[in-house]
Length: 346
Ligand code: FEH
Ligand code: ZN
Ligand code: ZN
Image 1 (spheres, rainbow, N blue to C red):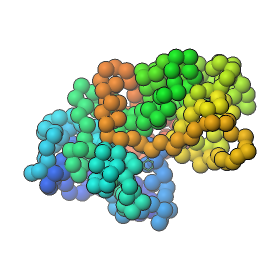
Image 2: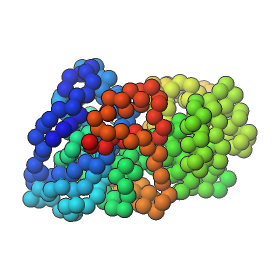
Image 3: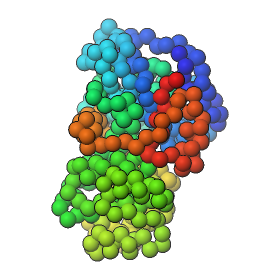
Image 4: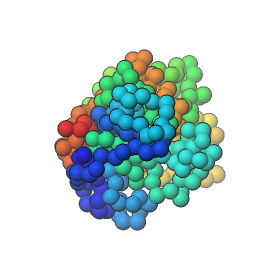
């Protein structure tokens, strides 16, 4: 089968013909129908030797949807032909966190030579992907594969970030979403669908603000020197009850703490390399709480799929044949993808 594999650190991923896997024990073989492309794929592709604990070669792709193609003799809980979404974080499978379906916070994460499908283990940028167990699959019948795949990472990560600060977002509250890309536009929709708060969007691109508007934001503004003042004027002068930063650069973190209400919540999701200096006394809003949410637990992926099946989520996608992965990667790298890029096997 064709697979897009990382074969040497610093080299671009290459299309390679490899054996189609055969499921053993509790494993499940999934025929891939769509795989999202994520900024983390760029971090993996660009990683210098020794930065990541992954063993080469492996197939990329951690945001995957497809249909069950074959079951190992001990596999149960899914049927051949069923459409499924992969729960992409694969932990040790036996620690306290993994036993509860929180592989994203596996207690042994620091010791594992992988983080999941396409992240040190063979992922979904291929015709088939082998999954260790049916517990890493969430049924998604009723969703198109191109809509289902991004839910497994962009959707779950955004949902998990919102879930951590939803308590602060009652009637009259204000949430600011910085970065309206593959994750941010879903965060706007998830806030709309699961909270009563006002949603303000910030981005550097007009077309991203248009996407925010289509996603249900109450207001959108470009990133400028006076953005904090503009947001305060729109969000009720006390400041934002929550800020979700899907960019994570020094500029966006400065904006976040500049608009946060005392006692507000800041979730930093983007890996833009920005830093916050936490000091007392200091300039940060008193009482604010910081979270660094990572991906999400399995049960929340099922909740995201349920929201999408109920019509509350629409993923803006740009579709590429798997054979055009290099173009998709280049477009993502240069900020020229609207919403989420999704690769579809040729
Ligand atoms: C995956 C692996 C490592 C870092 C970040 C990620 C995210 O893309 C998962 O949402
Ligand atoms: Zn990702
Ligand atoms: Zn574990």
